[in-house]
Amino acid sequence: QVQLVESGGGLVQPGGSLRLSCAASGSIISINVIAWYRQAPGKQREFVAGFTSGGRGNYGDSVKGRFTLSSDNAKNTVYLQMNSLKPEDTAVYLCNYARASYSSWGQGTQVTVSS
Image (cartoon, rainbow, N blue to C red; front, side, top):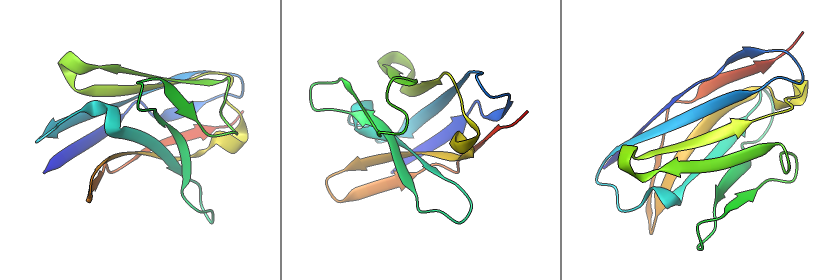
């Protein structure tokens, strides 16, 4: 079992920045299998960022160049640095741990981009 807790969401003005954290606990093999998704009201869940097999960031087209993925293995935590935020980035951001047939989701953190 893997438990995930997201934090760092909030209200920010367009052009602003936020850093989200996803803290993992439990039977963790590697935090590099943790990815970020988001879901806006009335829309399908969307992939935001994850790690490639080489440990580099892989990003959805709508966030490339603005969001950066990083991790701290000592803290079992994955971060999502979000810059140049736009109103269309407003959503609940969730992290997901997926390895083989196992998948676990966090409860999500709300990000609202509005003036």
